[in-house]
Length: 324
Image (cartoon, rainbow, N blue to C red; front, side, top):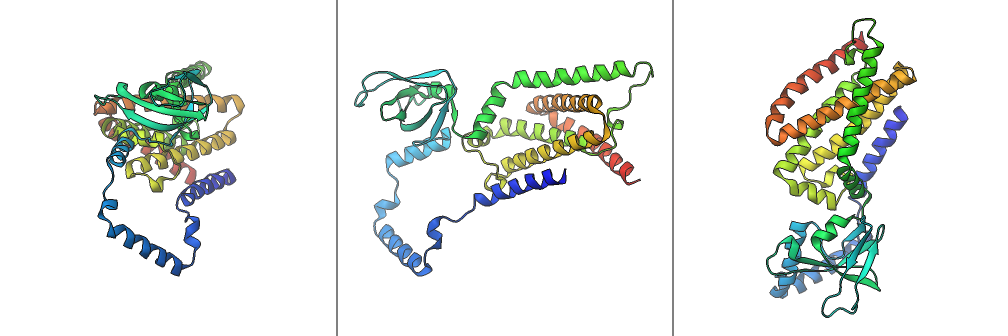
C-alpha cells in the first residue's frame, strides 16, 4: 500500500515540476542573453506601432478568452463523421468528411454578422487534402480537445446518467443484500461500525466537498471549468485557486479510495469486501448528487455544514478506536 501511495505522490510531484521546466534557450551564456534582450527591447520600444496589437490580433485574443481555443488548436473527432464544406477562395471546391478518431487542427475562424455561436464558422484540416469549414456548434458537439484528460472528462460527462445510476443501484443492492443477511439477528450494523478505519469517512468528506466545489464553479464561474476542459493539467500550481483546490481534492479522493480498498482487503473476505465497497461507492454517489444539486439552489451549503461535522466525528471516532 505504501509503495502505491509513493508512486502516486511521485506522479503528482513530477507533473508539478514538468510545467515549470526552463526552455532550452535558458542554458545559453548569460552575456549573450542580456545582449540579445537589450537589442530586442531597443528595437521594440523604438517603434510604438509594434506595441499596439492589430485588429486581427485583438479579435483573436478576445475569441481565445471567450471560446477557450484559437487557431492551431487540435480537436479529436468523437462523432461518426463531420462534413466540411468549402468557401469562396478555398483551394478545395468539394465537401469532404473527417471520421471518428481523426485529429483535426483549427486553421481559421470567421465570425459572421451577429456574433452568435450559430454564425461562427471554423476552418479545420486533417491533412493537406482534407480541409473545410464547419459551424462551431457542430464542431464542438462532434469533437473533444485532443488531450487524454479532456477526453476522459467528456466521456464521464456524456455518460454520467448511466454510470452514476449504475453505482447507486449497485450500492442499493449491496445494502439490501446486507440487510437480508443480518435479518435473523434483527439488527443492521451501522455502516461505519463494519470496519475500524477512518478512510471511509474521509472518502465521504472529500466527496461532499468536491460536490459542493464543483457545483459552485458551475454556478458562479463556469468559464473556469470550460478553460480547464480545453486546457487540462494535473498540476494545481498553474491553475486558479478554485480549480487548483478541485484538482488537489480529486488527487486526495483517488489516494483515499486506494487506501479504502487496501483496508477492505485486510478486514473482509472477498464477497464481504466487495459488498462493503459497493455500499460505500453507492453512498458516496448519492451524497455527491444530493449535495451538488442542492448547492445550485444554495441549500447545499447548509447541508455541507451539517454533513461535514457528522462525518468528521465518525472519522475521529475511528482514529481513537485504532489508537486504543
